Image 1 (cartoon, rainbow, N blue to C red):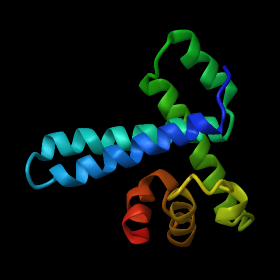
Image 2: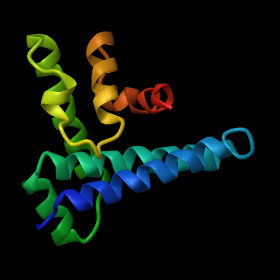
Image 3: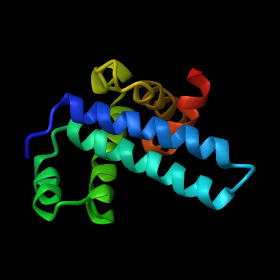
Length: 132
């Protein structure tokens, strides 16, 4: 599968759009807000797959023509493994793992995750909130 940085940016832009839509719906329609926020997280996971060039997963997605929970879970596990390695070995800074400026909130999420022993995908929304 041919994925490049522009594909990752596209997913991140979608994630930000879903995040804003979800935040706007929290008080009005919590069910719709939850769905939008889930889509935001899903788009971040897709961007991570492209960023880390997880070709085995990306090839399955291309062949199937869509993402499934199975592929999303695999990407989350890879991200958690990277986070855990960096945390245990105190080996990475956020710049060492997420070095593209377009990954807007992932570097802050990594910093928060490392400081608080929380998986990166669990703090993405917190990173987004404290950055604004």
